[in-house]
Length: 105
Image (cartoon, rainbow, N blue to C red):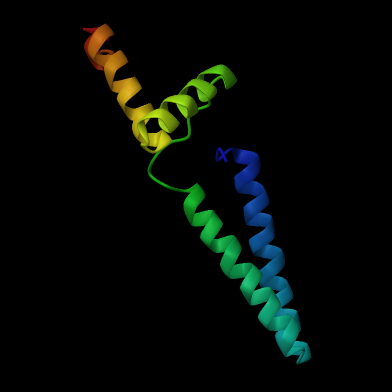
């Protein structure tokens, strides 16, 4: 799943709803419902932490994703490793883009 603004907003909404539900169930003394909402809250927080990783999401065309999956299945490596190597090879072949400050000078 590619972390987009919409996905992040939906996860945030799930966190808020689960938190409000847990508080309401706790106040009302519905402990089985409270445990259910706390479980949902834990899952949503785990998902939210995965969405906010240091690795940025880069949208890729569908045909390139199919190529990456094929290469990953042939080599037995994770798709992220194949993607990293493909981008690094491209950067080596065509050069690294200059920083904006260097271009201005």
